Length: 153
Image 1 (tube, rainbow, N blue to C red):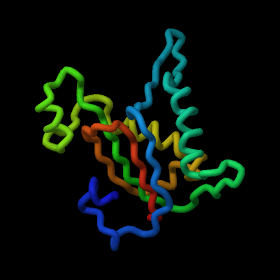
Image 2 (image 1 turned 180 degrees about the vertical axis):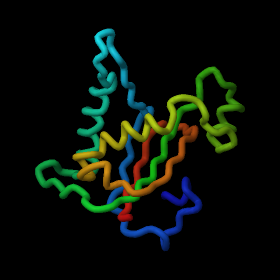
Image 3 (image 1 turned 90 degrees about the vertical axis):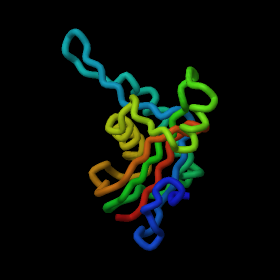
């Protein structure tokens, strides 16, 4: 439930929920690299393409009967669930999973947001310029994942 992660969100303040998507696994940020010739490329392009297929399957449920892309302004909420480092003690991990230790290391939110906006663009929403507002939470979770809630703005 969105309220578990975003306590300031109340059902009365949100318009219609278009979709809720959960991508299991470690959240991956965009990684833009520059070659010696000055060309810029995305080192995570394969990950983005694979994730688009996963999101398409989750959103459309049946690719032979695709839902139309969401059009119009949207509000997006992201949960980036990160696994605690293996080097941490059991006690420290438990504290992190309980929400007592914030996730303040890389990857940063901006790169995560860019990647997942690219993933949902053209699969769930028509374009990322439709996103008018939203919130994010980057925290330690036992089950690493990305959860995306898309609401009408």
